[in-house]
Image (cartoon, rainbow, N blue to C red; front, side, top):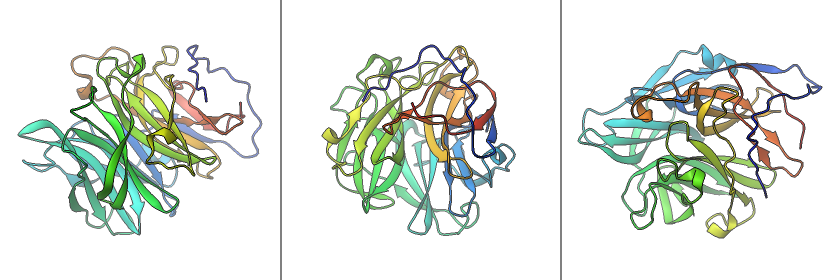
Length: 343
């Protein structure tokens, strides 16, 4: 499989006929929300969360349409502790519905050691995750204790898996991606398997980083998009692919693209795109890529504290053999969620 990056940033396309009225979304959709996560539930609502610039709380947005997220009231569902675990750098929350309950996965440090980042889980049994009570299930521990973040989860063939980023002191690299089976939504089972570590030039700019995994199950395959390099304009995305019927705990089942699949685009004015999630249009006919990007190249100081990574969306394209094409970040303004023609 070859996923070549289109460096021309050419957004000019011949308009395609559509059997339905297009759904439009205006970018940026949710300003100042890095690491955007969007979940379309069976109740018809979209639920959105992401890193708030203060890194001190978790908020949820709820709307019946993607565009409605731009106007939805942010509901604070959890705040950081004053000290100890979960008291600093509240990063990249993700919302999942598992076994009739809602779960929020997020990363956090400690006020006493702000870079001691670990993964944590919250649980809510209410029908609506913006209501009810969120219970702290504690740290999501892995096979060793080190810098870890960006937990995501999916189920395949009756088995639930966790995928996350973690530092292995024995492996050169800031963070690698791992997978493990889950005993329950807050506990892994058995041995964690390394899926990828930073190795290509586009994965080691500024920092050696593989992080922010996002899972898409389609066309008989499991796709994991992930982010790489420093969080400034060099931030970009890669892709892992496995057959849905393969042993997902065998690293050999996963094929890694040697090319960056999504990166900054000078022509559209979008820089550092990454840490994505996947959702669909309201009618479910169009796969939608949601990601963050800045509207400028240059940042001042540590880019982690630059607040202007905005949540954005665009339709995901596909090849004839069922491989996703990410293309380039689109310019600000209205985006039609129309399924592009297969290539």
